[in-house]
Figure 1 (cartoon, rainbow, N blue to C red):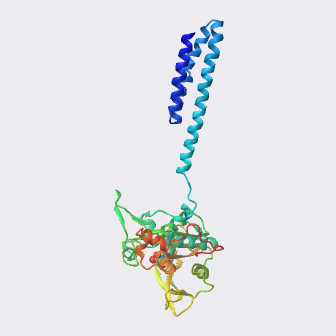
Figure 2: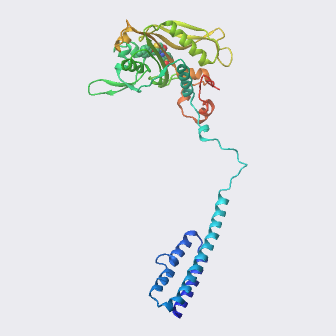
Length: 364
Ligand code: 2U9
């Protein structure tokens, strides 16, 4: 028994010291396991109780239980001290400086590109008139980009389009980057039944580059096809569009005869404006500014997509987005639109939280 007493006293001294020396909760846990864990020194001693005689156990039991209780308490006390210390350090490190300016949320830090803004505005205007929005691939075939639009292989319009072609395929055909969004109309006419009423915004490509042309640019084209769709509908639709887009109550428009292979008759459309000041004022002044092209869908184009021109007719129009964005938001050089310069987008970009709508305002 005196052996056990001295062993218990030695263990108590050893573990009390180790507990005091533990500088972290992890180190303290290691001490606890070494003393009180399943195979800990104190636990091992307690296992010996079972083999003792009742008299021995009477003395050894309270001795070992007392040892266990004091070590447990010492660990708990040390745990509290270490916890408090860790909390103090954490509070010190995570101190909030309430005098700092409020951080801008991520969603407000980004900017919407003027092109995206103009596309969103145009979509809002036409959606209000009941138009769907359709999209198609950037990479197209000759058939969808040219043939189906009444532009056969030797047609001079093919030269005007400065097409980017891919390398020849095994069957001798070549894919291309669409030169307009018109293939979307062809795909829609071939896959859906009239009445059709939709716009097709998107990227388009032509091998052309100067201050007002970039090899990649954006268009929105629109199409309406029904049994009795006529030029009056075309004119009203475009007038409503212009008033909404330029945010004016009235606008004067001029329809000049023009030529496109896919429309007949074809027209280019100008709006009355005043360019004498710094900004272009729409709807007043003596100047005219061209903003879009349009026409009645050529019967050959309807036929090429299996629509009977004796039953159906429709109108179509095309708008150059980038030029419209430059005009409305006063950016001078189109090339800067695609440079990815953060200073430019900070100046010309829009808040992502101001979504254009006819009721909430198109632009702010
Ligand atoms: C189909 C039938 C008709 C789309 C049209 C224009 C007139 C037009 C230009 C405007 C500025 C292109 O970006 S721009 O240079 N577009 O003038 N686009 S009619 O007519 C179509 C399209 C598809 C099946």
